Image 1 (cartoon, protein in one colour):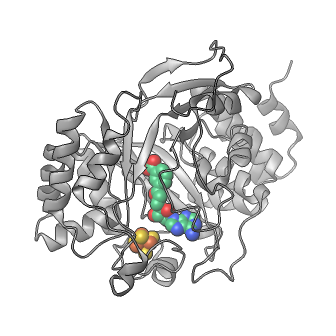
Image 2 (image 1 turned 30 degrees about the vertical axis):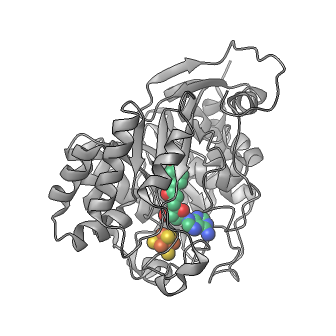
Length: 388
Ligand code: V47
Ligand code: SF4
């Protein structure tokens, strides 16, 4: 019997697409030109079949999730990204929030005794929350719960922190790592190409700065993620350029764990006139990312942004990770109009969501070590307590 990829190769008339499908079958890398061709010509069925083939070759049916929560120290921000629905300028700080170290430590303490493995800390770039503030935070979190993995600070926050402290990226990163920073989240990448970045996020760290910060983290043995904000004013060539820069750095360092495409949401921001992408476009983008980024082990659909139904669908389009329980601890997407207004899922809900599409739910830690395989877990009916 022919496999789905052989059928696809045999029945594809377009010679460019046929060549791409053959490359995927032979585990060969596609070029930037072929990346653009996929965006221009591939149907959802074509791209999805290839992406699913790669996903199953890499991970079989395994779908990862983790038990995590977020802390957003502040939404006061010195920058003014046009797509951001969440930040408030310092002049309007009464409309925002600013958490003290004690507030944040108290959030961590609310998880005492619960099987959480990761705290994800990101927020606005507050002019008064400096390096020393965050070093103290890291140290206090680690003193309280040493085994909790701290994934914190986008390259945007780090760039500002290091520049204010007059430290090189190497010096700053070493200090934070020593204080307890374990890995970096993927935020702040947006779109690297300057002609787009300048229009949507012109005043924050540029592509070279973002990539350098991740490179230094990798050199110190830390892992990180990478995001891409898609579905606004960018063109296909900018998406490929973005992924190309990430693929090049990954060839050099192998420090990225996961690629996370972030769908632009258009509520309450300066780009509300830009329509959002359709679900077909979303799934096509995930698929093409899976095909193009052959050196990224994982592709994540961040369900608080995409919505849980679409995150579930993406498990057939290359995605093998759907982030974690979250516990209603992030506001970035609810403020930007996501259908997930109070994002939290119990472990049971996450496992059920994965099983419904015949995948195998596996709880991971931040570095993708298996914590527990839930494939044979039968949940007994219980009250809706989350993080059980
Ligand atoms: O950099 C802000 C994005 C990012 C909007 O590493 C928006 O595991 C869409 O990076 N529409 C921060 N996106 C969040 C982030 C992240 C999230 C989950 C997991 C990980 C990880 C990282 O949120 C920002 C920006 O690209 N964002 N506003 C918006 N209106
Ligand atoms: Fe600030 Fe981040 Fe919002 Fe940009 S996306 S304005 S850097 S909080």
